[in-house]
Length: 486
Image (cartoon, one colour):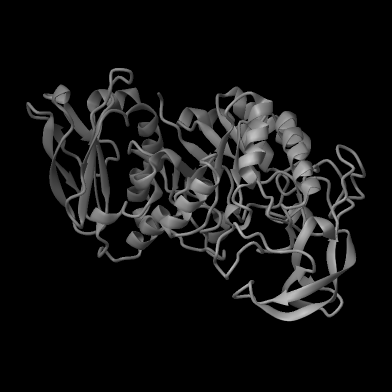
């Protein structure tokens, strides 16, 4: 089976020019040629701030840039027609298209409602601060620009379990609606982390679940989607997506890929979620991201032997989607934890050239982030993605035996001519490591695909060699035939 490589095709600070779907359409052929197999697109529905909205403050799930709502017809990324055209073109080139699903909350309601609510503690939502009183909550979504086209469902306070704003007193607090309870089967941060922001969707209401099921099928059928990235799953009842995905997969008659964002550096949390949801989705390997970030900021003092300890890709590799950075880790975001540029190629080698996990490359690393003066990682990243597509196959042998210099080899296979490689990297001083690729490689000449080392290494009768690496760098050694095949 060929390797899979996902691309997150957006970053937080893209221009609000309604042009991103067109960019995706224009880039489709190139992305497939680069070696990507799937594309994760940002939320496509109208957000609370209209054309300025990145997509994580959903206002109308049925408005894909079709209706004059929140000050614009298009979303930040374009119109409904642009979106459908982009998805279709991406798929026509052989790329799977994954849509971003944001179900935890809604924002930008059209009307206020008077609701009885108690105030809970910000730091422990199980603790009541003040008993029930009437508040004015923005909870009624009538979507006047769309009316009843596609759906006549009206979201009101019955559909939500709480908000964080009382318009009557102009007060910011955690308000839990009277007669409601925060879902118990959610992350236990802050005592109970059901509430995140906006009008908190109540997944215990049958009409809400039915509407989200109906919308999911409409969205899948309308856009011919191949799968989903699921936002903020730690804040949503752990079993909700078991049913939602199960119904969609049954209706579609195909697997439908899914990956959830459970943002926690604690591997136990990810395991708990996977067990609770029945393994219906992959999860992003957040613990690995933090390990990569820490290594990039350690001034060469990180123990690279332990880089995969307590990570999802090591403990449950079949469920791991690995990544270096994403839109949430960018500077200026609440989860900002950016991997320093000098370590980017080492980090991408660790997710792209190994046998476990599905790696996801970040748009900002591929194209740069002009608004933050962040340059693209460059040609080295393109070479790594292509090497994953064509060369990173066969049995893996690890040489994670030194705190400063680690490596591994892939033996190659018959289905991918020229495949097989040796990777050596360091976050400190340069050096070398004796590694064996495999006896079938005996007598072949290996060169550094990244061009960081000039040597031509002749593999011995066991298919091994002493592979060098520069300080604070990575070298990917491949056969001369492998280079020609890229």
